[in-house]
Image (cartoon, rainbow, N blue to C red; front, side, top):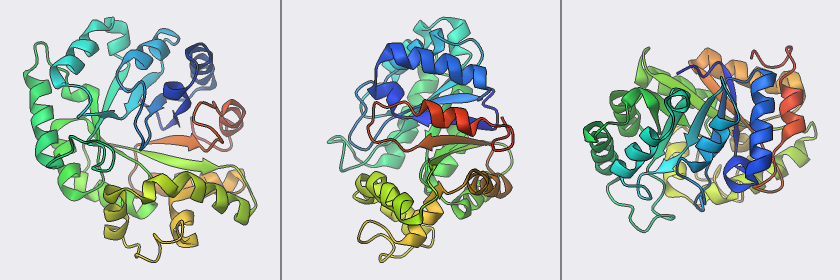
Length: 289
């Protein structure tokens, strides 16, 4: 699966208009990005299966399309494997199925997430035909899930993480598995405005136990997670500032061991495609597409 070094992660592909999504996907391919990540959100993804992926794949010819992520509670493994194989082969060859265990606060079926994910991956292997491990990636942050992702998929898709977490994930994964992370970007140079925007985006995630546990494990404190997030938390999880400052954050992740970075530009609404920002970020001096 060719992801390249930089991709675009956006909620708007799964929450917005399909016609505009097709047009935007075509442009992202022309701009040279390696992947389009179809984002979900803590409150649930209204089109979290492979229907949107098919729309985006049909509008492009080279770029990889990834889901970030399909909840294992919402789609039985046999159905997911069947939906994958229902796509034309030329589309399947560019599809990376991101899988996640979601959150106890979101899914009423949430239970024993590690064992549930392991069983789900085994069921994908046993499906007829199977959904190949090379065509799936797991959203993981903790040590058990990270090791399970390395064993049962092509690697890890991490979300809202610092370069320190990237270094830890790479050391846990070893050299083989893919480490593809999301980096949230706020193209704003005013610290107060950038951090306020970041806190607005971060608010629903601060209410989720899985993320809080991961951040505390990574060295943040309970005080960092209080009152919308400390400046330290915001500045470690979000890239903001001038273009060269944003590029420096991406470089820090690469040096820490990331293979691919999916850039998410914060927008006011879930259905807004940040197309001008994506064009600006595609400048050769900023992102190594």
